[in-house]
Amino acid sequence: QVQLVESGGDLVQPGGSLRLSCAASGSILSINYMGWYRQAPGKQRELVATITSDDSTNSADSVKGRFTISRDNAKNTVYLQMNSLKPEDTAVYYCTAEVSAVIGDVLDRYLEVWGQGTLVTVSS
Image 1 (cartoon, rainbow, N blue to C red):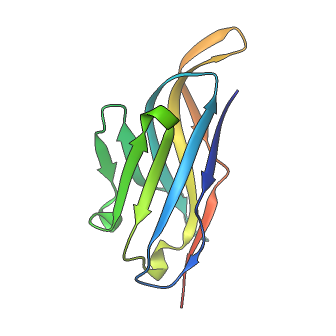
Image 2: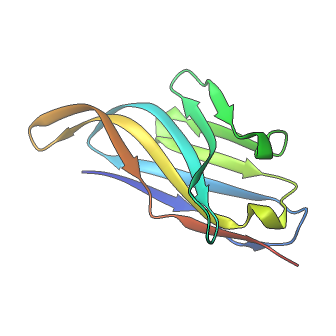
């Protein structure tokens, strides 16, 4: 079993900052990539940022220059530092990872896992 647990969501004023964390646990052999998606009310889930095992990053144009993704490989944890937050950043933020893990007696080299989501509300 592999789990992702997010934390850090909160209510923040426009222009403020938040840092989200996501820790992976379970029978993980390696992590190929980790990332963040978000889903605003009435909208589809969209990519925010991803980071690979060699620290290559990718992020949505809407967050470039404001959000930074990073990871701590020793802790199997990914972070999303969000600065200069805007009301349109309000959404449930989901952590995702592609891992190599043993599930039962089976090795799955490309297991995709999702967290339960954490709510970020940007409002005055």
